[in-house]
Length: 357
Ligand code: DNO
Image 1 (cartoon, rainbow, N blue to C red):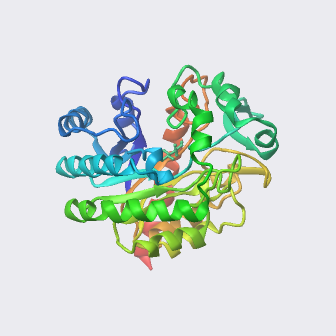
Image 2 (cartoon, rainbow, N blue to C red):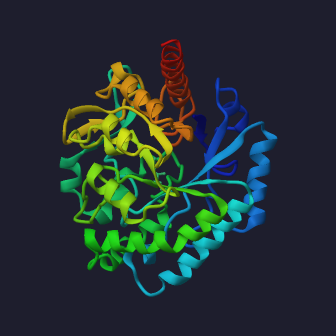
């Protein structure tokens, strides 16, 4: 596995590449061109400039999170062709730059959804949290306003103000799109991009929907084993793969995470590994990474990744805000660094144990 850290670029991220490199075992960053809107073309020179900056700091770009998908592609409107053409060209430029993993999602309107960005735990740390009750009470148009105050003046990906300003329009555009239509549009998109992925050996890694159910009446399809296997089969190409995000699939307690990992052998191209603590199925928070801090057995998760021979980029996912750090919720330095070390500790123990057998 390639231990990596999500980095928002020197213009946006308060955390420097130097700090990231100082985390033990850290090899790469997962990043993106943050000023690109979904559907916009990424020029080769822009990609190379970003790559140079990272490599000059002694790290590699282990993958892109994300090259976002324009709504026209998800909706399947006639103008999708132009955006798919741009996507293909972007993939070609990434491939030429030697970048071989691209994370994306196919969630309508909202990306991940949390109802609190700074729930205070008994130890004084703060975490992202979700309650169904809060979602059920809120008008989706007010969703952004309701969490904005806790964003600490950062722009959280998926929640860009320009995008949120068009929210009414977006809902209108998705009116005719149900789950089947979304599957169909995803298939169309994947079939169009697979040739360029084959040519440049680019692993596409879809991020699951978070939480793993419909919110605000919008369809969500990447939510469980059945659907993800359906997606793998519908475009049966090794480059059509998954970002296995334990914290997203894991929002639904019915999802057996280690079993899902095993069933996706060869198709997991990227792993987001974090823990959740449930008060009930409808009320959970993003705990520290350790098994003892939440409800997941992190050993079993890492063991499943190990057993399927996972060798792609992996990153600690959302962390708590600790030690008075102020930053983008979920994406501070300290707790994610602790998470990275913990995951590597589990991996080393599993690896040594297996090799001694
Ligand atoms: C949240 C992230 C998601 C993810 C996208 C991938 O913190 O895991 O925003 O990056 O869904 O496109």
